[in-house]
Image (cartoon, rainbow, N blue to C red; front, side, top):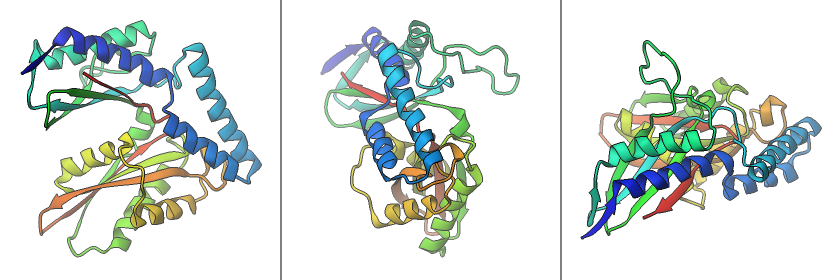
Length: 272
């Protein structure tokens, strides 16, 4: 059985915190550039130009893409034939604190959600999936709360049709308006339980799939008809893409969750 030390995991998580906050993923940058080519509104083009330039400056000068450096969400794919020497959870927490300090990234986390208190570097949300093999894949997504605050969940009747599902999702984006810094990437989770639908919606933002379903294409078209546009400037591009993840659910329910990401969808991965 292969063994990985907690100290190695801490080191990699620290590096991922910096990489994710400084370098916009190439697939997201490509979507932004494609949207710029299609856009006909001058104000929308100007907004997209500023967004693309911002990403280039961040990459070149090693600066954070956004001042909101987010709450780190960590996705683990843990091989069942792998042993961790030391505390996996503490390694991630310590790696986050190290990375945010090394990268001079903003302290955006409060440890007590009720009393609040002084923001700190440490803190992360961890999701673990057990998979085959003896490797550990770590994906870190710093989630800013301008967009996270626009998350929505509905427990629809099992008799609800596709149109009701689409109305809820498009309505969630309409309600968000320009507050969460469009153009958006929209993650949707359908099925499971209430909590799992919300997780699926966030997993949808990881960019694991490249081919769009008919529902995803229809949702993208409906959302872009809202004409909120880049940074609320109007135009063709309110969302860059929509990704739907689904899971089996109970005969008496139909959970649907929406997780919105701003144009700065930051994520970075490594495999140990």
